[in-house]
Every structure is written in structure tokens, then in C-alpha cells.
Length: 410
Image 1: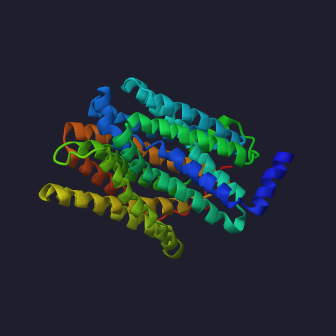
Image 2 (image 1 turned 120 degrees about the horizontal axis):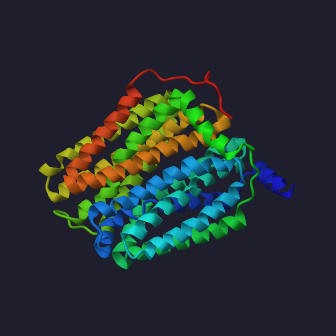
Image 3 (image 1 turned 90 degrees about the vertical axis):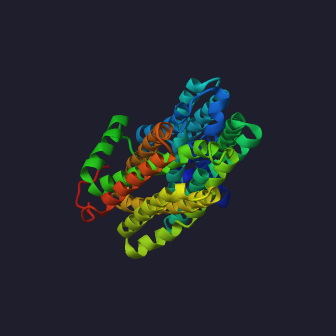
């Protein structure tokens, strides 16, 4: 009963500012673990004697693990104490990052990367925890703050890892990441209240309901396909950028590759404008505008071979701002669409959307590594352009579907 009163009191009062910042930091540091490796691939591969294609599977397995974790573990937040789940995942994530930092070769690193991805889904437990603790009148503000932390974790992780790898080595970055998760785990153990389960469905029933949601709601399918296709190009670009910059004609180090994350952050921080536009004009329009911006950004990079080196770098920066803004705006609009389908199944709807998104990222990392190794950087850009065009086609094809009449899955 004391646990129930604990959560009830938190909901009535609303989470304190330190608790909101704790959740934002936890979500950001957890999801950042997925991206630390990307700017370091160039020096990482040469240090352990792995090929560019083999090291390209480090982010692939990390993102695939995250997709599997969202699909198979995120629904457990409705069934068990979410605080306990977060603490368990934090412990596993810390251990996996330590193993990654001590990896003697590519095999151990790939295995650790998969576990990092699965356990980093603690971020997808923290966001629903914030929504549960927030009172109705400030829920959007609280969740938005936590999501800002998550988004900055995604984008600034590359800046931090590039700098640390350049000056202290790639192993130091993994060790520092493990330390940050250990501190977040300790702070969460002390500061986050316990949560009562909202359902007593068996695990198999929870997972089965995901399939029924997919079958019943065309809006969910369109959002998942479009965001997944956009993620293919997003991941293909970021997972191969460091390797490309490491070679001719740029010959730049990990710090320079990581600094491109600042360009992404600049684009993503402008994305809240898309939320206001979705409120006024509807999310369907925002999905089309966002996907269109992604297409134009990737297409513009086809002009790089005709520019001098400094011009190519400037083009990369501008394009990164553009496609990051487009992808984040589209994600915000897709979340608006998906969360409006069935308020009683938001955790599972979120699991379906983000599973599709990170499957797309895993596919993009894998294909990007192959395309770069077998052909060239321009082949990676062509892949990103085609996948974003396909996403735009999904949003343009057919009228928006209203699935309010579909059967609700609870």
C-alpha cells in the first residue's frame, strides 16, 4: 500500500524539477549508448584489425538489439514495476559497455553491441514513467522535457564520442559511458518511485496484442513503414560518415566526424516547430513536409563530387541539418497520429512504431557498410535518397485512414 501511495502522491504533486532532469538525463544517456560507436569506427577498426565492412556491423547490431528490446521488453512496463525494469536494464547496460571497452577483437565487440542495444531500451521505460508521474495539466511539458533529453542524447553522443576517441581512445569512451550509466542507475534507485502494474495480462498476450494492433490500424502501419524507411537513410549516413571522412580526400579524425552531430542537433532542436504546426494544420501535412525535406537534403549531396573539399564539407553540414530536421519533424507527427489511435494501448503502439524505426536503422547501417565498401560514398547517398523517396510515397499514397472505428486492443 505504501508503494501505491508513493506513486499516487507523486502524480498529484507532479514530479519535481530534479526528478524530471534525472529522467531526461537517464533517457538521453541510455539512448546515447547506441551511437557512441559511430564516429569511432574509423580508428576502432584499424586498432583491432577489423575491416570497414565488419566494423559497420557494430552499429547494426546495436540498433537491431534496440529494436528487439523495444518489441520484446517494452510491453513489460505495463505488467511489472517500471522502476525495477529500469534498474535491471541499467545494470546490464553498464556491464555490456564495460565488455565493449575491453573487447580484444571484433567478435566480442559485436556481441557486446547487441546487448548494449537491448538494454539501452531503458530509455523507452523512462518516458512512460514520466507520463505516469506527470499530472494531466502538465503531462505534455514533462514528457516533452524528457524527450528533449533523449533527442539530445542521440545527437550529441557523436560529438562527445568523437572528441573522447580522438584524445583518449575509443576504449575510454565505452568506459566513460559505463560510468555514466552506473551513476544514473544509482540516482534512479534513490530518486524514482515504484510503479504499480496496469495490466495482469500474461507476457504472451501482451506480445500477441502488438500483432492485433498492427492488423487493425492502417494509420499505425503507414506511420511505421514511413518512419522505418526514413531511418534507413538516416542510419546509412551516420554509420558510414566517420569511415568516409577518415579516407580521401578529407582524412579527418573521429572528433571531426563527431562534430557533425552538432549539425544534427541544430536541426532537431528546431523540430518542436513541427509539433505546433501539427496542432494547427494536422500531423498528416507535417509527415509529408518532413519526408519531402529529407528527400531534398539527401538529393542535394549528389552535387558533392563537383565541389571543392571545403564546399563538400559545407554541403554535408547543411544537408545533415536538413534531413535531421525532416526526420525529427516526421517522427513527432507520427507519434501524434499513433498515440491518438488508442489511449489505452499507447505503450504497445509506441513499441510497434519504434521497433519499425530501429529495424530501419539496423538495415541502414548494414546496407550502408556494404554500399560504402563495395561501391562508394555516393552509393550510400543514393540508398538514403531512394529510401526517403519511398517514405514520402507511403505518406502521399492514399488518403489518411481514420482508425477510431477499429477494434481497440487492451
